[in-house]
Length: 188
Image 1 (tube, rainbow, N blue to C red):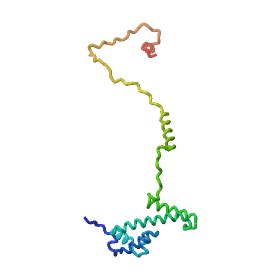
Image 2: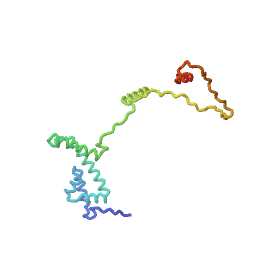
Image 3: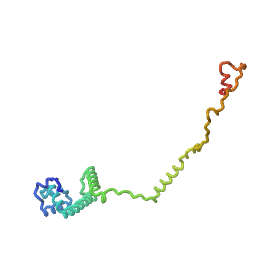
Image 4: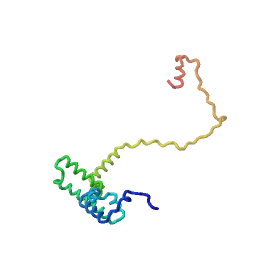
């Protein structure tokens, strides 16, 4: 099924192979694609359309852009080509670093530290963690819960009646305010 995408390059005249090669040559000399297209008086859309039609141009453009990035990296090594103002030179250098890290992270990006499990820092960290784990108090042991119990069902007829304890009615040695009864029951 054909794509319904229409780009501006469809309506512009086609770029010749020779002009596309000239643009790639300018890119390999340190110009951006936009700058090279302006010098060759063609639009970027025309150039990109020509690169889509010819895979060889795509390969050459990728190599030219890599050379352009190498030129930018070389600018960082030659401070005489930097601006004379120190603040602006710092911004200039940091911008070049930023662009290189984004375009070619494998080559110019920040290198991730490799983790060496045998290093002294890792060994000391592991020992500190083990010591911290050893300082954690052990949980209180819970007594074994009763999981099995024997019981018997007693019919109401078989159950013995609870007889109240006899009370001495004539004993008035304690106060009659009810404390005597509480003492007799063992609450006081």
